[in-house]
Amino acid sequence: MDQFSKFRNWALQRALPLWASIGFDHSAKLFEEAVDFDASPLISMHRRVMVQARQISVYALASQRGWFHGRDIALAAGRSMIRSFWAVDGEPGWVFSIRRDGTVADSPRDLYAHAFVLFALAWLIKLSPDDLFYRSIEETILFLDDRLADRQHGGFWDALPRPDSLRRQNPHMHLLEAYLELFEATSQARYLDRAGALVALASRKFIGSDRGVLREYFDDRWQVIPAPGAGSVEPGHQFEWGWLLRRYEGLASVSLESEVRRLVSSALTLGTDRMQGRIVDEIGEDGSVRRRSSRSWPHAEALKSLAVETRRGSGNYREDIAALLGRLVNVHCPERLGGGWLDHVSDKDEPISTSMPASTLYHLIFALAECERCL
Image 1 (cartoon, rainbow, N blue to C red):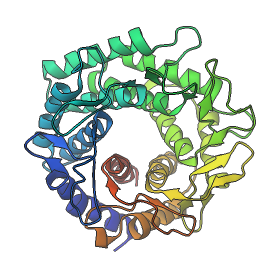
Image 2: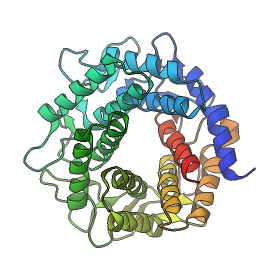
Image 3: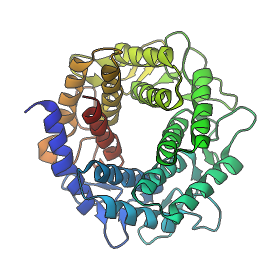
Image 4: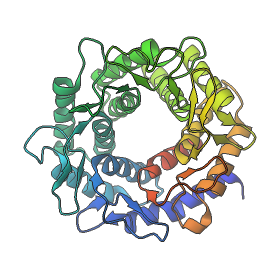
C-alpha cells in the first residue's frame, strides 16, 4: 500500500471517527480542545472558538466528499458555536474561549479566530442555507470592519484589546482563506474583492522581494520586526500562502506566478530536507535555520501546495510529495495513536507534544482533499 493510501485510510477510518466520538462532547454539541495519548478528552482545557470552527469545516468537507457522515455533527456544532461564543459577554464579536460550563474564559476578539469562524460559516452554508449562518457572516464582517480594520495602513489589528505591539501576517492569511471560501460558497464578488485586498497587502508587505521569503512579524506601519532582512520566516506558511495564491489566481483570473514560485522555491530550498520530507519550524530571512524542531501542519500545507503545482505542470514534485506523506504517516500520524497525532517533535524527531490538539485535524484533512483532487 502506497503512502497516500495509508494516509487516506488513517484519516477516513481512524481520525474522523475518533474526533466525532471521543473528540466531541455530544451533550454540549461542541468539540473537545485536545485529547491525551490514551484518547481521553482533556476536560480541564478551555474551549476556543477557533477549534470549533476548524472542526466544523473538517466535518463539512468530509460530508461533501462522502468520506464520513459529518453533516449532522457539523451543523449541530455550528449552531452551538454561535450560541456559545457570539457576543455572550454582551459585546459584539466572538469571544476567544469558554469554560466547560459555558462561562467566558477569555474575552479578547481575536482576528485569527474570527477568520476561522468565517471559514466555518462558509462551509456551513454549503451544507444548509440557514438564515442563522448568513446572519452570522454579516455580523462578523461588520465587526471586523468596524472594530479591527486599520484604515490608515491596511489590514487588521491582531486582536481587541491588543496583546502586544506586534502585527502578524498569519491571521490575514486565514482571513484570505475565509473570503475565498465565502466567494466559492456564494459567488458574491464582494468576497473576492476583500480577498484581493489581502493579496495586495501580502505582495506589498509580507513577501520579501529578494529571496521571496514570507516575513511573520511587523510594527504598526507594517515594517518588518526586528528589521528588514532580519525577520522571522516559517516555511509552512510559505507553502500555505503559495496554495492560497493559486486559489485566488483561478478565481480572480489573474497571474501571481512570480510570487508563488518564489515562495515555494525558497520554502523547499531553505526550510525542507527534501530527502526526508522534513520541514523545520523557523528560518531567518537570510536562510539560516532558527528552530530545527518540526510540526505536523507544515507538512500538510506543503502537500497542498506541491499537489497543486504538480497538477498545474509548474513543477514535478511527486518525489517531494511521497517524502512528505511518508513523514506524516510514519512520524506524525503513526498507527499506534489510533487516529491521533504527534503534533510537534524535536530536531531528533523526539516528542515535544504532550497531547493531541484538535486544531491539527484541519490541516491534515484539507491536505488529503487537495492531494486526492490533484493527484
